[in-house]
Image 1: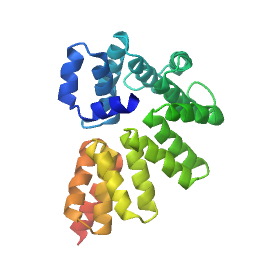
Image 2: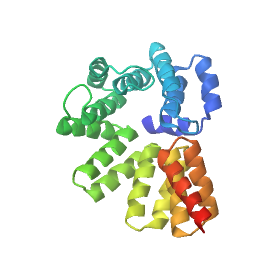
Image 3: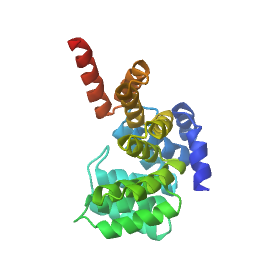
Length: 248
Protein backbone atom coordinates (compact mmCIF):
# COMPACT_ATOMS: atom_id res chain seq x y z
CA UNK A 1 0.00 0.00 0.00
CA UNK A 2 2.81 2.44 0.87
CA UNK A 3 4.52 1.75 -2.46
CA UNK A 4 1.22 2.27 -4.32
CA UNK A 5 0.74 5.63 -2.59
CA UNK A 6 4.30 6.60 -3.52
CA UNK A 7 3.72 5.70 -7.16
CA UNK A 8 0.46 7.65 -7.27
CA UNK A 9 2.13 10.67 -5.65
CA UNK A 10 4.93 10.54 -8.22
CA UNK A 11 2.41 10.99 -11.05
CA UNK A 12 0.80 14.06 -9.45
CA UNK A 13 1.93 17.59 -10.30
CA UNK A 14 2.17 20.40 -7.74
CA UNK A 15 -0.80 22.06 -9.47
CA UNK A 16 -2.98 18.95 -9.25
CA UNK A 17 -2.01 18.44 -5.62
CA UNK A 18 -2.87 22.06 -4.86
CA UNK A 19 -6.28 21.59 -6.44
CA UNK A 20 -6.92 18.37 -4.49
CA UNK A 21 -5.74 19.94 -1.24
CA UNK A 22 -8.10 22.89 -1.70
CA UNK A 23 -10.89 20.36 -2.33
CA UNK A 24 -10.28 18.93 1.15
CA UNK A 25 -8.11 15.89 0.39
CA UNK A 26 -5.77 15.71 3.36
CA UNK A 27 -3.31 13.29 1.73
CA UNK A 28 -2.81 15.74 -1.15
CA UNK A 29 -2.03 18.55 1.32
CA UNK A 30 0.58 16.35 2.97
CA UNK A 31 2.17 15.31 -0.32
CA UNK A 32 2.31 18.92 -1.51
CA UNK A 33 3.86 19.85 1.83
CA UNK A 34 6.58 17.26 1.28
CA UNK A 35 7.24 18.71 -2.18
CA UNK A 36 7.79 22.15 -0.64
CA UNK A 37 9.78 20.73 2.27
CA UNK A 38 12.20 18.85 -0.01
CA UNK A 39 12.09 21.11 -3.05
CA UNK A 40 10.62 18.43 -5.32
CA UNK A 41 9.49 20.12 -8.51
CA UNK A 42 8.99 23.40 -6.63
CA UNK A 43 11.38 25.80 -4.94
CA UNK A 44 11.88 24.79 -1.31
CA UNK A 45 9.58 26.72 1.04
CA UNK A 46 9.59 25.58 4.66
CA UNK A 47 6.84 28.00 5.72
CA UNK A 48 4.46 26.79 3.03
CA UNK A 49 5.32 23.17 3.83
CA UNK A 50 4.56 23.68 7.53
CA UNK A 51 1.18 25.23 6.69
CA UNK A 52 0.26 22.28 4.49
CA UNK A 53 1.34 19.71 7.07
CA UNK A 54 -0.79 21.39 9.72
CA UNK A 55 -3.77 21.47 7.37
CA UNK A 56 -3.35 17.79 6.55
CA UNK A 57 -3.03 16.83 10.21
CA UNK A 58 -6.08 18.85 11.24
CA UNK A 59 -8.03 17.00 8.55
CA UNK A 60 -7.10 13.69 10.20
CA UNK A 61 -4.22 12.45 8.02
CA UNK A 62 -1.73 10.71 10.32
CA UNK A 63 1.16 10.94 7.86
CA UNK A 64 0.44 14.65 7.79
CA UNK A 65 0.60 14.70 11.60
CA UNK A 66 3.96 12.92 11.50
CA UNK A 67 5.32 15.39 8.93
CA UNK A 68 3.90 18.27 10.98
CA UNK A 69 5.69 17.00 14.09
CA UNK A 70 8.96 16.59 12.18
CA UNK A 71 8.76 20.17 10.92
CA UNK A 72 8.12 21.33 14.50
CA UNK A 73 11.10 19.35 15.79
CA UNK A 74 13.40 20.84 13.15
CA UNK A 75 11.95 24.33 13.39
CA UNK A 76 11.10 24.35 9.69
CA UNK A 77 8.72 27.22 8.92
CA UNK A 78 8.14 27.86 12.63
CA UNK A 79 9.88 28.07 16.00
CA UNK A 80 11.32 24.69 16.99
CA UNK A 81 9.83 22.71 19.87
CA UNK A 82 11.61 19.38 19.75
CA UNK A 83 10.29 18.19 23.11
CA UNK A 84 6.63 18.53 22.11
CA UNK A 85 7.31 17.13 18.65
CA UNK A 86 9.07 14.01 19.96
CA UNK A 87 6.12 13.25 22.28
CA UNK A 88 3.79 13.35 19.28
CA UNK A 89 6.08 11.24 17.10
CA UNK A 90 6.57 8.67 19.85
CA UNK A 91 2.80 8.31 20.28
CA UNK A 92 2.22 7.87 16.54
CA UNK A 93 5.13 5.44 16.27
CA UNK A 94 3.72 3.28 19.07
CA UNK A 95 0.45 3.23 17.14
CA UNK A 96 2.33 1.59 14.27
CA UNK A 97 2.82 4.56 11.94
CA UNK A 98 6.01 3.92 9.95
CA UNK A 99 6.50 7.55 8.92
CA UNK A 100 6.38 8.66 12.57
CA UNK A 101 8.92 6.00 13.58
CA UNK A 102 11.21 7.13 10.78
CA UNK A 103 10.93 10.79 11.74
CA UNK A 104 11.47 9.94 15.41
CA UNK A 105 14.61 8.01 14.49
CA UNK A 106 15.86 10.95 12.43
CA UNK A 107 15.22 13.38 15.29
CA UNK A 108 17.05 11.19 17.81
CA UNK A 109 19.93 10.73 15.38
CA UNK A 110 20.26 14.50 15.14
CA UNK A 111 20.15 14.89 18.91
CA UNK A 112 16.97 16.95 18.88
CA UNK A 113 15.40 17.27 22.31
CA UNK A 114 18.41 15.69 24.05
CA UNK A 115 21.68 13.85 23.43
CA UNK A 116 22.11 11.79 20.27
CA UNK A 117 20.77 8.26 20.64
CA UNK A 118 22.45 6.36 17.81
CA UNK A 119 21.41 2.76 18.57
CA UNK A 120 17.78 3.69 19.37
CA UNK A 121 17.62 5.92 16.29
CA UNK A 122 19.03 3.18 14.06
CA UNK A 123 16.47 0.68 15.37
CA UNK A 124 13.61 3.09 14.68
CA UNK A 125 14.88 3.87 11.19
CA UNK A 126 15.35 0.15 10.45
CA UNK A 127 11.81 -0.59 11.63
CA UNK A 128 10.34 2.19 9.50
CA UNK A 129 12.41 1.08 6.52
CA UNK A 130 11.19 -2.51 6.92
CA UNK A 131 7.64 -1.17 7.08
CA UNK A 132 8.08 0.52 3.70
CA UNK A 133 8.95 4.15 4.53
CA UNK A 134 11.61 4.94 1.94
CA UNK A 135 13.04 8.04 3.60
CA UNK A 136 13.91 5.99 6.69
CA UNK A 137 15.96 3.63 4.51
CA UNK A 138 17.79 6.59 2.96
CA UNK A 139 18.45 8.24 6.34
CA UNK A 140 19.74 4.97 7.76
CA UNK A 141 21.99 4.55 4.71
CA UNK A 142 23.53 7.96 5.35
CA UNK A 143 24.00 7.19 9.06
CA UNK A 144 25.62 3.83 8.34
CA UNK A 145 27.98 5.35 5.77
CA UNK A 146 29.05 8.19 8.07
CA UNK A 147 29.59 5.92 11.08
CA UNK A 148 31.76 3.16 9.64
CA UNK A 149 31.62 3.72 6.65
CA UNK A 150 29.91 0.50 5.55
CA UNK A 151 29.56 1.13 1.83
CA UNK A 152 27.80 -2.09 0.82
CA UNK A 153 25.15 -1.76 3.52
CA UNK A 154 24.69 1.94 2.74
CA UNK A 155 24.30 1.13 -0.94
CA UNK A 156 21.69 -1.55 -0.26
CA UNK A 157 19.70 0.71 2.06
CA UNK A 158 19.75 3.70 -0.28
CA UNK A 159 18.72 1.47 -3.20
CA UNK A 160 15.82 0.27 -1.10
CA UNK A 161 14.86 3.84 -0.26
CA UNK A 162 15.03 4.78 -3.94
CA UNK A 163 12.87 1.81 -4.95
CA UNK A 164 10.33 2.81 -2.29
CA UNK A 165 9.99 6.21 -3.90
CA UNK A 166 12.42 8.41 -1.96
CA UNK A 167 14.39 10.61 -4.42
CA UNK A 168 17.04 11.30 -1.75
CA UNK A 169 17.82 7.58 -1.72
CA UNK A 170 18.27 7.64 -5.51
CA UNK A 171 20.59 10.64 -5.20
CA UNK A 172 22.63 9.08 -2.40
CA UNK A 173 23.21 5.77 -4.19
CA UNK A 174 24.04 7.70 -7.36
CA UNK A 175 26.65 9.68 -5.44
CA UNK A 176 28.07 6.43 -4.01
CA UNK A 177 28.42 4.98 -7.50
CA UNK A 178 29.99 8.21 -8.72
CA UNK A 179 32.55 8.17 -5.90
CA UNK A 180 33.53 4.61 -6.83
CA UNK A 181 34.03 5.55 -10.50
CA UNK A 182 30.89 3.84 -11.79
CA UNK A 183 29.68 6.77 -13.89
CA UNK A 184 27.09 4.72 -15.78
CA UNK A 185 25.11 3.59 -12.74
CA UNK A 186 25.69 6.95 -11.05
CA UNK A 187 24.05 8.67 -14.00
CA UNK A 188 21.05 6.33 -13.93
CA UNK A 189 20.22 6.96 -10.28
CA UNK A 190 21.01 10.67 -10.30
CA UNK A 191 18.69 11.01 -13.30
CA UNK A 192 15.95 9.25 -11.30
CA UNK A 193 16.40 11.74 -8.48
CA UNK A 194 16.37 14.68 -10.89
CA UNK A 195 13.32 13.37 -12.76
CA UNK A 196 11.51 13.20 -9.40
CA UNK A 197 12.25 16.92 -9.00
CA UNK A 198 15.08 16.74 -6.44
CA UNK A 199 17.37 19.72 -7.01
CA UNK A 200 20.33 17.94 -5.45
CA UNK A 201 19.91 15.08 -7.92
CA UNK A 202 19.84 17.44 -10.90
CA UNK A 203 22.95 19.22 -9.71
CA UNK A 204 24.87 16.02 -9.07
CA UNK A 205 23.87 14.64 -12.47
CA UNK A 206 24.95 17.89 -14.08
CA UNK A 207 28.31 17.87 -12.30
CA UNK A 208 28.88 14.29 -13.45
CA UNK A 209 28.21 15.21 -17.09
CA UNK A 210 30.51 18.24 -16.89
CA UNK A 211 33.30 16.55 -14.94
CA UNK A 212 33.38 13.47 -17.18
CA UNK A 213 33.17 15.54 -20.35
CA UNK A 214 30.25 13.39 -21.51
CA UNK A 215 27.89 16.32 -22.14
CA UNK A 216 29.10 19.62 -20.60
CA UNK A 217 26.33 21.69 -22.18
CA UNK A 218 23.54 19.54 -20.73
CA UNK A 219 25.48 19.28 -17.49
CA UNK A 220 25.52 23.05 -17.13
CA UNK A 221 21.75 23.18 -17.69
CA UNK A 222 21.22 20.58 -15.00
CA UNK A 223 23.47 22.49 -12.60
CA UNK A 224 21.35 25.56 -13.29
CA UNK A 225 18.21 23.53 -12.62
CA UNK A 226 19.66 22.32 -9.32
CA UNK A 227 20.66 25.85 -8.35
CA UNK A 228 17.24 27.24 -9.29
CA UNK A 229 15.72 24.52 -7.10
CA UNK A 230 17.66 25.76 -4.09
CA UNK A 231 20.63 23.35 -3.99
CA UNK A 232 23.64 25.35 -2.75
CA UNK A 233 26.21 22.86 -4.06
CA UNK A 234 24.77 23.20 -7.57
CA UNK A 235 25.06 26.98 -7.34
CA UNK A 236 28.69 26.70 -6.17
CA UNK A 237 29.58 24.28 -8.98
CA UNK A 238 27.90 26.50 -11.57
CA UNK A 239 29.75 29.55 -10.26
CA UNK A 240 33.09 27.71 -10.42
CA UNK A 241 32.32 26.55 -13.94
CA UNK A 242 31.56 30.06 -15.14
CA UNK A 243 34.72 31.43 -13.49
CA UNK A 244 36.74 28.73 -15.22
CA UNK A 245 35.23 29.68 -18.57
CA UNK A 246 36.09 33.36 -18.01
CA UNK A 247 39.74 32.49 -17.29
CA UNK A 248 40.12 30.54 -20.53
